[in-house]
Image (tube, rainbow, N blue to C red):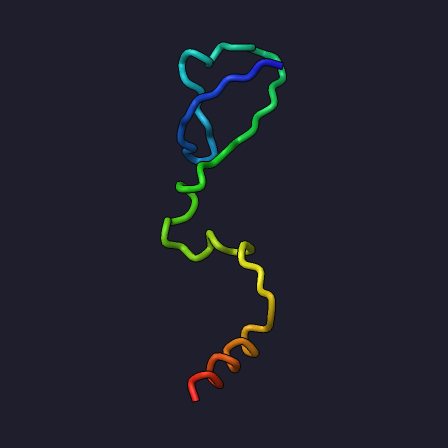
Length: 72
């Protein structure tokens, strides 16, 4: 299997091939894999980038209660 790599933008669901590849393997079946850079999908300050990455060792409310008890 041969592979090519290039960067482009999607417009109305269409990915345009660069001119140098438009007739490459003309008429043959190809496999397309689309990768999106992480910085393009979410703003850098978005909390969603942390979703599923934090593992809690105890119930958050129980932890908060312990902290509040320490303040008294």
